Length: 77
Image 1: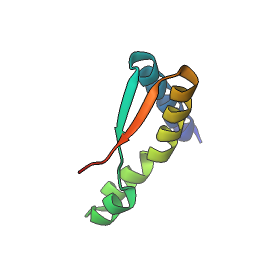
Image 2: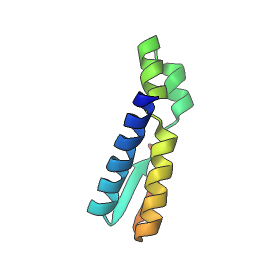
Image 3: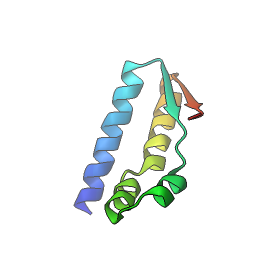
Image 4: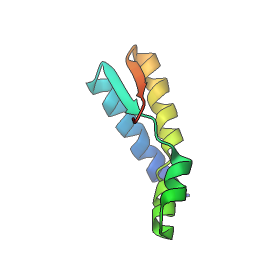
């Protein structure tokens, strides 16, 4: 539980920093399922799952909307 709290705290601080620093935030759409399938080692799979991409994106979107910032998604191609 403690690691989960530390991760959430880090994501909150990071998303707040982006919203405070930038008026327009561009994020690249990541195919997380594709990244997991491509990964060759168990460590890679675990690191991708631990990153909690969707939670970070939700925090960033919510905070950007509340602060009147623009958040855009960019296609990786």
